[in-house]
Amino acid sequence: MSGDRQRAVCDYLRRSYEVVDGLWFVLAEKRFGYSAAWELDRQVWEKLPRIQARKAREVLRLSGHGVQQLAQALALKFEAEGYETTIDQHGARRIIVRVEYCPWLHLLKKSGRTHIPIEDICRLELDAWATAFDPGLVAAFRHARCRSDSQCEITIEREPVPPS
Image 1 (tube, rainbow, N blue to C red):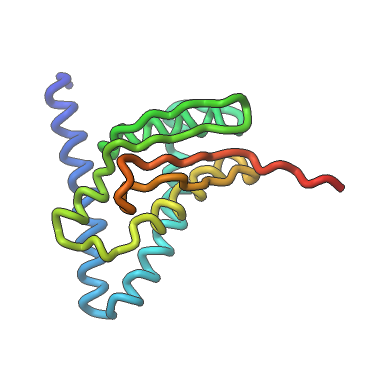
Image 2 (cartoon, rainbow, N blue to C red; image 1 turned 120 degrees about the vertical axis):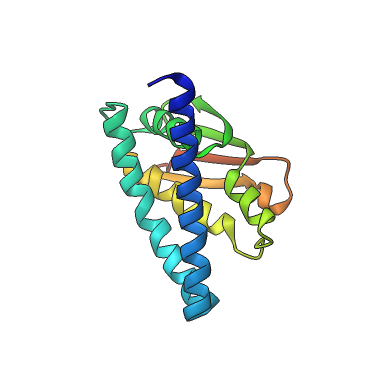
């Protein structure tokens, strides 16, 4: 498959993924109300990242657990979904993810649905990705584009073990 064709297939699949996410939410909201649709969405975004993380681990042939493997898998996720990010690794315990462009926030703004708490979805998603690579990893949002910051900045690090 040529590079142009491969890009077209990837763009098609990405757009389908975005559309199905928004479409099911709008239809669930119409049928069951916003609160029920949000609860269903929250449940999806607790489970889907674990499935995605397993697949990323498989595709990238990652062995081991920890922030280095998580950084590689997140780079794949962000590229596949059309984010513009940088991921900096700080030792074996911490990575810092900076998001300059978020396709999901762009879509919510475009559709006039900025009342949806996208930061909550991002928290669920990144916590699930982090714990899929190491149950001791925790994501903390320092800045968020959906709060009008210029970029998102998320620190994912291993929680210190409390002294016994």
